[in-house]
Length: 140
Image (cartoon, rainbow, N blue to C red; front, side, top):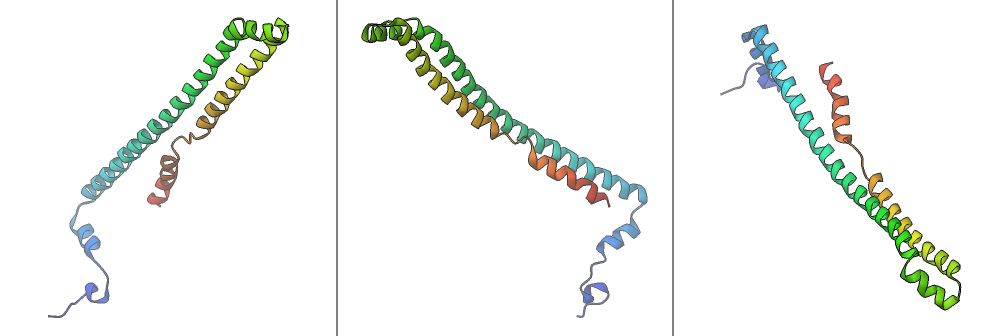
């Protein structure tokens, strides 16, 4: 047996044969179906990326919330135990209050920086944006 025609040269006339046998309406229907599938896949990808970004945003917001609680403790502990304890040691309630405030401010700064770091990890939906840019090229 010998191969004849385009397949012997390495070509494939399958697409041309299909186009010759199929009506224009059917071909357009298939194209619209493919476009519809492409858009559904892009929406699914966008949902997945937004969910991931939302989780990271939630973690960052939680760390900022922790920084807020620490800030509240600055006021609370400033006026309670350490203030009086240090006041007894250094014999100055004013300076002991400043020392306690500085300690809690350091805690608040550390938590806020960690929260900022988490928010900087959020990238949105980069893969979706990239593939959507490729769609117009597909139609050319």
